[in-house]
Image 1: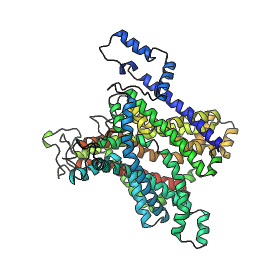
Image 2: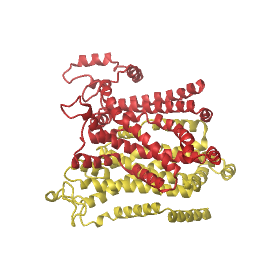
Image 3: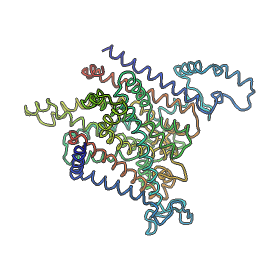
Image 4: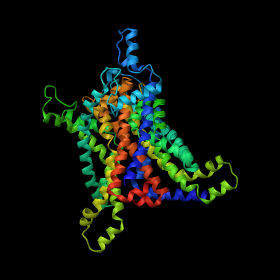
Length: 318
Length: 284
């Protein structure tokens, strides 16, 4: 077991290393000088040289890379070239905002998808399945921003129930209910956009499980079909879901780029889009590094979790 | 070979008869392609500005109203469809070519080549697509060419994985082994024997990748990072529509519906082809 964990973790490290080199190279390729982020136009040439030397920017590229990696590991992610703010500080404000939006939406989507997927899978080919499966394949085709616009129009403009922009009403920053009402629409959009693929996944894995021998044995013993579904099938359907949940880890950061933009939610998504539009390379690369590291860590975590709950898998990765 | 193709065609016809949704999807796709090709038949030029008649709701003269500059909205949407479909199809061609090439080389040669190519696939796939595509696009001048390249160059990984797995089993088949031992050149073996055999696999993958490319393009254009004025796609039309949502909600309906129906139809077409290619899975 330990050997497997160790081996799997060793595979992830070179990936992280290569990604960091790619990010660093892209920053170097960018048409700007890293020192620009720390200086102002009216500094003297000597001062600029001094700052350069202090930050190691006069060194060859591979030494700069080592400095950069050391900084990242120590929580020093550099400075924005547009606002001159510390990226670490910006991220620490924005990541919780995005998590606040994505986490409840994802958990709700997961819960509803398991129920709907089980219903559809257990009634394969009947009307309940046709409706659920049909809606999911439509759902996959709907761009999340379009769904957001429709919800904004209906609930924001037409019925005027929910606010459509930002996180708080001005002057009402501490009110929890105000925050909650700002969350309703973006969370709904995210939930609906997460659901179709999850539903399809649960459905097909339910169908797969129902054709297994153990189900037939239970049926032969005369067990009620709902008992089989909840006592046996559900457990085996939930197992592979761990993999999906692990792989969704990066969504906590980048899962809501488009939705946040539509609703002006001050999270990572709007931060990223603004950085892209302003050619703010250090910020863009920081987010790229962060999100790809989360993908690698998420995949690693889901593999390890899965091998713990289902020991059969260990031999298969060989 | 000819007999096999005919059998596939028959299977396809049978499948279309059986699967009504797929048949409707197919008709819709043909219709939308025809409309895009014959877009110039519209009585309104797509760029004729008529500010006096801007933001008019649907009427007998303008079926889907006019946009903020008074241009006929249906005509705009048809021309936008040209762009969206072109991006989808061109990006698919690029990504399928790369995917098939990498997949066959990786599967056929195995060993170090396979290891190197598949680790490259791992690296590229570990960057979320939204981030990857936008990051690369800031190094290019935004526009039609950039978006086709960016989507095409960074979405081939799943095709490559599928084709590689398929090649692994095909290269052990007797006719490939025979072709190899009878002294045919490597290029010929891959071109004449391996690629035709993986054809069904990647044709299904490429249908779905058109759908994905259209969705990606619409999201990027919506964020203002894709198609730029004076060109417009369904995604960039929705970006404009967002600004006018309060006073002209009808502007959001048409492009959005067209995206949904087109993407849905391409996905259904993929399902249909998959059922023909792998009859075993059609029951699911």
